[in-house]
Length: 340
Image (tube, rainbow, N blue to C red; front, side, top):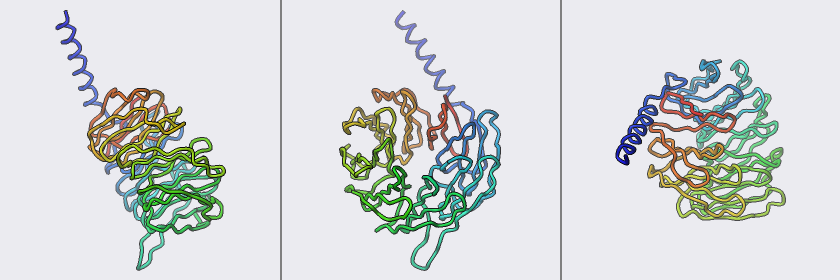
């Protein structure tokens, strides 16, 4: 009986693996999908390697529209607010599109000089009435969300490689040289900050606190009001993703492929899982009792949020969707997949 039970379990396991392997995409485009995925209502939005941007209606699995913004590769996670979707291209162009029909509301063309270029390594964020973008030349710019005009420019000490965050009337910026800055969102003046011993990833805001991780293996928590340090924690190896937060859990990924969960209250490590997949720059996602993370060898792994134990994994996948939908979306080349 035991042998029969083992055979049945093996058959069921192989069936599940086969079903995963032949899973059909919900959408396919001609070029590689190169951005993260944003969800607004029934629309799933993303950009590709030639700079176009797409809105897929998840209820009908058909495209509502595709932009005419061909150029350099689209990058980062698209920013969405109201009827506006903002995305960036690697050469520094930024576009604001109307979600209802895909029409361009405005576009920003980067500035160039003989000494520096205005490219982008990550996407923009929206905070209040502005769009904030961190350029590789070391400039942080605030663009008016309505018309794309530059409201102010902040100059960092070194080039910027990650997106800023917004919270509490501040733009929160991590720099490659380990400086963390709190910048007044209306004036562009640095009002406070801190740092780490390595390059800082994109910060994350939850409630009245900001959390940031760094390549020196540290995670920091700071109360935004009065700039009160709450805790800092070390995970023992370089952290390559921004932190994500949900229900008291903070999750980061590392240069060796580990997924690490920390307690939001005190920074203590709750669990860690080694994917053995190498460096991943894919921001993880927490959905209910599951953690979804991308690996450096292009797998999406699903972990139990309470224990860190592996539930399943999907090969040839990356670019996990942001919050905003009950479904999880991920990318494999030029294909978009979805699962509950």
